[in-house]
Picture 1 (cartoon, protein in one colour):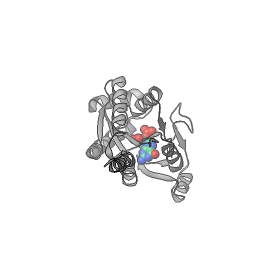
Picture 2 (cartoon, rainbow, N blue to C red; picture 1 turned 120 degrees about the vertical axis):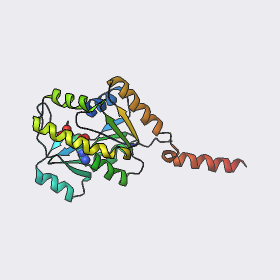
Picture 3 (cartoon, rainbow, N blue to C red; picture 1 turned 90 degrees about the horizontal axis):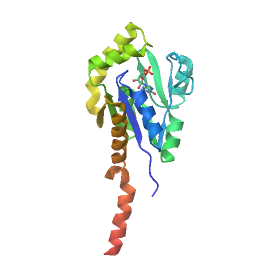
Picture 4 (cartoon, rainbow, N blue to C red; picture 1 turned 45 degrees about the vertical axis):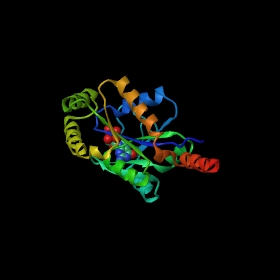
Length: 207
Ligand code: 5GP
């Protein structure tokens, strides 16, 4: 039986450590593919086009929307962010578990189109720790940090839409937990309809 890939959405407040977490997960375990989003925000120092994001001009991004080239897109803190469709569908067909690291508006749009998607929300241990991590990153101005903290308060209202939360306190433990959740998700009846049907048919034949 060919294993079908799961579309995994990882959301969490800016600064919760999603990026590091997902990077470790992919390094440590096989079978994952990371979707690279398109954005109109400026690259941060050290970020490369095609690695962290595809950095686009606003007009280029709007063309992608018009061509139906994005599974979803959202406006986050004055910039567009979106998920290119082609790569995700190819990898899922290939049996890979595809990770989208996206914010909540986009996550809910994806959930409507892909009912089997697995939605995970990464939480910091506390709000204070979240601010500390954002400041420690040293890549954002105080104004942007405040904006992201306000945005976190808004996003916190939607956490119940997710299937699981994971608290990013100890990185290694959090990575292990994420992988366990995905492994368990592969074994839900919903995601194994064909296999279950086949066994049923075989059992009928045994009668
Ligand atoms: P950052 O600017 O910190 O890289 O990302 C800001 C927010 O945008 C994060 O919450 C990140 O998960 C989200 N984001 C990144 N790519 C996408 C995307 O393709 N679609 C949506 N909806 N959100 C995204």
